[in-house]
Amino acid sequence: MPRPILATIHSAALRHNLERVRQAVPDAKLWAVVKANAYGHGIENVFEALRGADGFAMLDLAEAERVRQLGWRGPILLLEGVFEPRDLELCSRLSIWHAVHCDAQIDWLAAHKTQNGHRVFLKMNSGMNRLGFTPERYRAAWARLNALPQVEEISFMTHFSDADAGAGQPGISVQLQRFHDATRDLPGERSVGNSAATLRQGDDALVRCDWVRPGIVLYGSSPDYPQHTAAHWGLQPTQTLSSRIIGVQQLAAGDSVGYGSRFTADGPLRLGTVACGYADGYPRHCGTGTPVLVNGVRTRTLGRVSMDMLAVDLTPVPDAGMGSEVTLWGRAGNGAVLPIDEVAEAAGTLGYELMCAVAPRVNKTVD
Ligand SMILES: *Cc1c(COP(=O)(O)O)cnc(C)c1O
Image 1 (cartoon, helix red, strand yellow):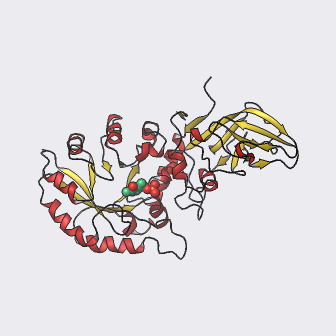
Image 2 (cartoon, protein in one colour):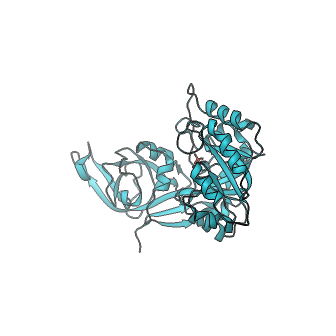
Image 3 (cartoon, protein in one colour):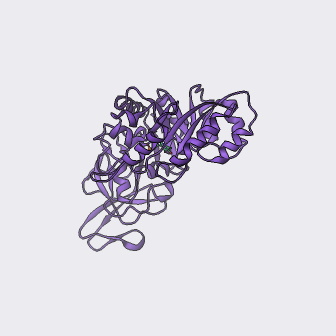
């Protein structure tokens, strides 16, 4: 028998979350963002459930090919564009749309021989300062692209740095204004909204535009935790990381647990040892007190996470023992939910990082 740790991908939850985005922006088209192997879920594991999207967006040409191989004939978008001139051949052959964010990418297109006109998303750096043309240089980039016979259609995009901003913080308004000012009279479709902007401000036509680009919401994690929980947004967890108790210890007052003896019992305590550690992708930064479900009952971790194991307090679950179900995040057998965002918070990070980091040694199954 393999180690009992397992990642379960929930198709119904993926469909539900996609529908949730549709409701938020009913008249926008929707790119399902499946970069990073569908945020760690596996592109093949989410594809059927997300086919209701209008297109799939990712960074990696190999991932775009996989989506085509799964039979998707609709739009596919490379959010960072191509990384070398050769990539354009595959874009031509597989009709893959691509972002254009720098002059080199325009040079490569200009030198590219193709019969098939390319559809490109011209990326503006409206303040994130990662990729894209500044508003001042945007129009010149557009004019260059517009003059190329290789280019069939130009759309416009930008990406927000602060779409999850709290009350009193500036949020997206400055970037939104810059984007729309600089593209005002240019003909073409527009796309600006990530998950947070789409859920929070999708009722604003300038935010939803023609296309939204939700990622994290599809996977059931809140885009602006802890301001709002996944439950607040009506999202369901799409990934459950589960395992089992493979050992039980009875501690007395003064007994300590794990490497570095970071937890010491102040009285009698039953401890369960779980087959899950940081080599499975569970964060080592989670200290004592991180929430965890045993038989669907909420309890806490004890001491340091080791490579292959961690310890949980069985006090609230007296009937638990060898083989009992442990839910590290997601949905337990009894239906109880432990949001990935709560575990991420205990590790000082985001649900994004946890779901992407589940290790290859963890088997995945789809339900
Ligand atoms: C990752 C990404 C998204 C999706 O972001 P979420 O916060 O997961 O919704 C959208 N647009 C671009 C350009 C991205 O890189």
